[in-house]
Image (tube, rainbow, N blue to C red):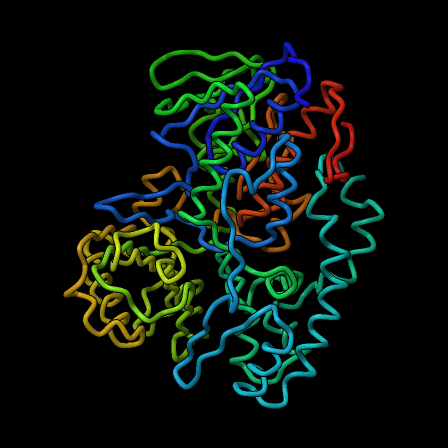
Amino acid sequence: MQQQKSQKHILVVGAGPGGLTAAMILAFRGFKVTVVEKEAKVGGRNASIERGGYKFDTGPTFLMMKFLLDEVFEEAGKNLDDYVECTKLEPMYRLQFKDRAFEPTTEREAMLQQMDACFPGSRDGYDKFMEVEKERYESMYACLQKDYNSWTRYFSLDVLKALPKLSVGRSIFEVLGDYFEDDKLKLSFTFQSKYLGMSAWDCPGAFALLPYIEHAFGVWHTKGGLSEISEAMGKVCEEHGVDIRLGSPAKQLLLEGRKVCGAELADGEKIHADEIVLNADFAYAMKNLVPPGTLKKYSPQKVDKKEYSCSTFMLYLGVDKIYDLPHHTIFFAEDYKTNIEEIFKVKKLSKDLSLYVRNASATDPTLAPEGHSAIYVLVPVPNLTAPIDWEESEEPFREQVIRALETTGGMTDLREHIKEEIVYSPKTWESMNINFGATFNLAHCLKQMMYLRPRNKFEELDNCYLVGGGTHPGSGLPMIYESGRIAANLISRHHKVPFTSKNLQVQPN
């Protein structure tokens, strides 16, 4: 049952997944909630792109930890299954190397058969991986659910217990060496570092929990695309009386000293509120939405010196053909390590590409006309701190990607069948208010995690809460949903609004 309406007004800036999560939970708990969004639809980077009868997800295409999404809907008084149709994918994806294809699955016997066929002698390592990484997951998951508003929260018993599981000083690639000898097999359990926009050779070893989460809980697809989740959240918000104002970009936060008391919109309207939830790109918000001269820890100059994820080059292709590709395929560069070094360290465009292709039409016919496909192609590239002129580079790089799809990807006649094409470069992401076009936001290095990452209750301004990939617990849809839940719980506790949450890690201020 929805709680009695509160007089407290919460303003959410940005209708991305984190903002929508916070909004629907807070509205269910009785708060008056207003959401302002600059675009004409909800979802942010989780929104859909539609053209010519084809539908694409803008960003995320893997749904992991579905149980967490079930929980946040439940805490908004709803059942996820009443709004979206989710399907577990088996196998989860195809990993395509030059000399072999590997199709991991959560079905243990089928997985062991895959291991025997592709990487003989490795099945014991897989069982060890699942056993040891389960312990890491169980130790660390509670830490990801915490708010870190003080050092005492950082050095809580949960965190201290998890410290031995952080693999400090080791990369995720090194950690996977504890289980497997073959480098390609290690890559099969470390490419997930790309979900964070990081190199497997630099990503902290603690994130070995990512492949464990996939293998333990699976990868899911939502009929109509993952954008349907944000659409569903928008519907829940409206059912709870949230005022969602689309096409209403925020211009600047309104301050009374350190206290945020609302926001001014681009059209000059001022909306006052008791609390504000900020769901913009973190660095963009610090540089553009906070009045100049206000911030010290996160001043524009200091924000730009932070470490950022890579960017992505995207092709969204509507084609009048069905290709024999599974739902998800990752094509590894022949020299994958060099490819990664060129993206993250050398900061140049590689000649030897790694590609991710989503052929969701293989399992979901709603995304394209009958007999057609909506093909989503993602190529990791350096962010805009790299000296790459994308006005000059976009068309040659697009040609390189198409050529790779025709050869490595097996789509030999692709050019003949393209009916719709949309290209996103790092400059496109930057135009969407993403600092340096860093698609996955702040990097997840140890000095930018947990207490050391921007906190959900923003430390530099009062009455201000942060959600999204740039704050704790980090990037990826499940963690972004969790950031929204943490913010909602913190606001509820601050205003002494009783609630029941499966996230028991948020403590009173």
